[in-house]
Image 1 (cartoon, rainbow, N blue to C red):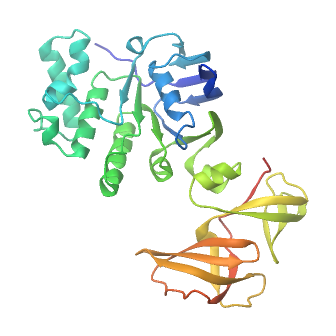
Image 2 (image 1 turned 90 degrees about the vertical axis):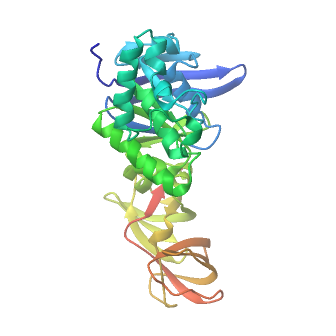
Image 3 (image 1 turned 135 degrees about the vertical axis):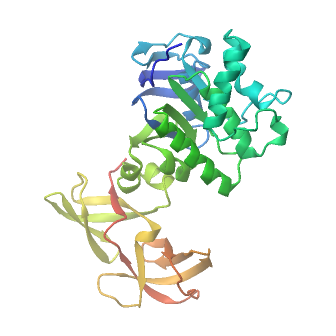
Length: 355
């Protein structure tokens, strides 16, 4: 049975309404074939509804959904070449690992032997060779996750969907399993749509991230673009920590702007802004603390300092308000009340276009 390769996914002006509630509001995006794209955002932003519309578990109220260039808008889940890995894994407790993995082909009417052969291949692929006869209750969370992935992969779908796949795992395991999912996706050239509310997870696994807020797309782009050039305050604050500070653009020319942050002035990429009030997003690692009285810096006072192993979390009170600072490496603790100067690194301070 020759399978089609990975397929692109395209949303054209897609909306999803439940009565008077709009869960997804006129969104457009494309997931290229063989790429991993994450839908990222807080609870209730519309990301899971979007994933369910790709799967055919929800039928869009408006717009068009194309998979591999084919219009699937009105097709049911069974008629789409898509598999989903659910948050709960949804394994059958009374069935062995092998029978769980072979479930899809069996339901599709393939012979038992062929279904098992396909399942064995995929279990080996996810590192579960030798676990075929165990039951889900005998596996760790990470192993159960892999069975769910093997079961989703067994029919070699054109698109693989993940809904918060790591939320049941502890932090260390989460890191390992997300690396495994990314490796598998790249090795097998899979098209993956991946839903999470965890921005670190999104940054780690994605080719592109679609940030959603209030049923719409706030911004989409490569992980680095979103972190370094957020298009609005929501994205700046949601992807990584950011100090959002009101500032004044004093002059702008040739794509650069002189920006007054309190009594300090910094030169930043203008991002299309002219003279007048604006906001900057300042990453905590872009704030540099030094001896008080340094030229071109803000005077500050330490409010809190917490030791977190490889870094310190510091709150500094300044004329532009409280600023959150992260210092990496074996730094000395700073006592509350200590006077410092706060200056700005060359990267990590970004003008935010007005809303």
